[in-house]
Image 1: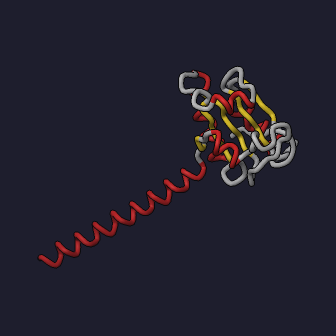
Image 2: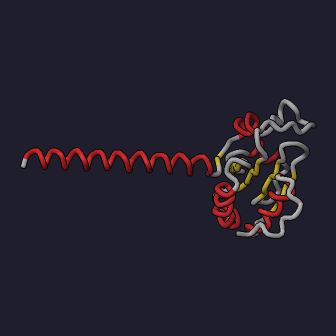
Image 3: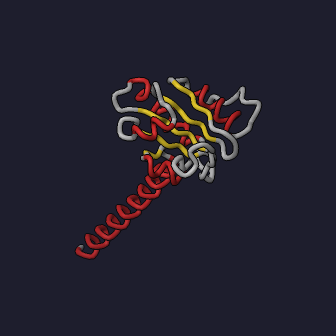
Length: 160
């Protein structure tokens, strides 16, 4: 009887560890695809060093990126946040997604002359970035991503 109890305890412990590892793996996968909060220093390291090259856009990223300039108090910003998370999942491994809090990063907001939020910066791997002010529908963001960032000209069926 004691052996059965010990054996059961071992099985339960192994099962719990296994599910914990599976959850950790899923959490790491979700973490990779999430929109990453960045500050000015990270922006300069990951995207573009505006101090080093104030007049020339030199993209530092490995993939095209989308940067959401937002503020915690902004209602439209809160409305598009889940859309950005969905897009980060959808384009995982193809496009990097970042967000910058304009209240915490006024210098960075000034560099891009952010007048209203949300403001979304779309940066292709090569060429100049584009800025879109105001909240849009997911399909509108997908169209810009397909056409501008990925170079897919026929983006009529981008909605999922």
